[in-house]
Image (cartoon, rainbow over all chains, first blue to last red):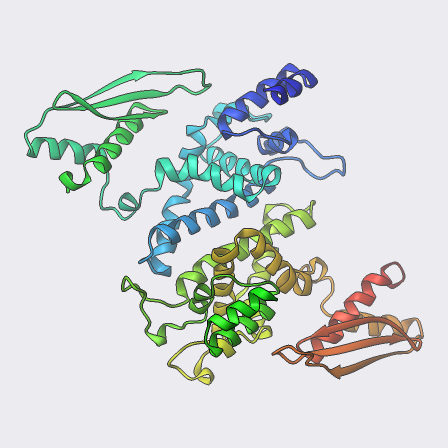
Length: 243
Length: 243
């Protein structure tokens, strides 16, 4: 807390806000704010460093892209001991797909912090994924490989990397749960409420009731995702029964 | 030394030899020999682990490939602050080319330790690069990211990753040195001798004399490479004069 206070005192209000927003996104304390600023600087801002090199997030994207790929590779390697090289390569490409990267960037609302001369509305979809990759590159420079691993674990692997879904065995946990309840003649309901907490990004919380009892909870940036998370947890909790 | 002795005592002679050979290749002490054994096991050996999964180096190759790519990416990112994403991607692909990987594996004579049902002569060129990648994957599992970085630094970056050559500005340092000597009317000679040291792999040492004085030395697995290394060192030592 003292460190936070020092940083807040020694910097402008704007820096203080950026620091706090960043800390929430990262889940740990950033040290070198300039590196993270670069991760949010679009080429349209036309900035240069002291040596005249362009200062924007494109080089960090290059770095973050390869870090993500390596961390996901190791996760898949570890989780699927029976998967051969071809399988691992296919699964990895699903996780690091452009579409998925864009989703990750959107989830964290990274575009809110972009420094650009272009209006936020006129960016295409890919800006979200690019910002996500650049942020990961900045984490590597600021705190090293272990912190990258932690961040990817919390923001990518825990919420999204699910072997059964990647393999196409389960498309939606929610439909799985519903079908199972209907087959087993059990009642179910999802109770959702909006819950922004003290975070910059709006969140939804959901409770899943089966036969009137709460069996699991979920929390995410959309109603659909929160329901899916609660369903996934119910699936794992009742795995023996549901299969 | 005590650790080495313990390991040697507790294992068969064959394991002891493998351990010593590995230690020379790695430049540090391996801990989990079984992981490295896997890195040298070809699919033709038809081995299985205790759960019935195929036991060979193909999954480790997947892991090593991505580790190498990430480590080289960071090196290029750091060394060329003016290089944009496209430049960095192009330079990386030169370093991690199939041809180059094969050269790296051959340099370390990794094939000498392969466990396979196929005779060593009937393997194609790619086995060398595959073994190199698998070894890197095993290093990651055994000792983590930092050790991978050290190994790649010593075996790939230090001897081979040279920005000027990657950019095609200098094809051969030896020709550069020779041309410069002729232009400047200086005498030069390379003195090469074979020097196996106590290493499993034959090495060549070379001294480069200009005007009768030793200006640099090189040491590598071929005469040509040792001369090139000495020339490169002379180039950097005399950079102001040679350009």
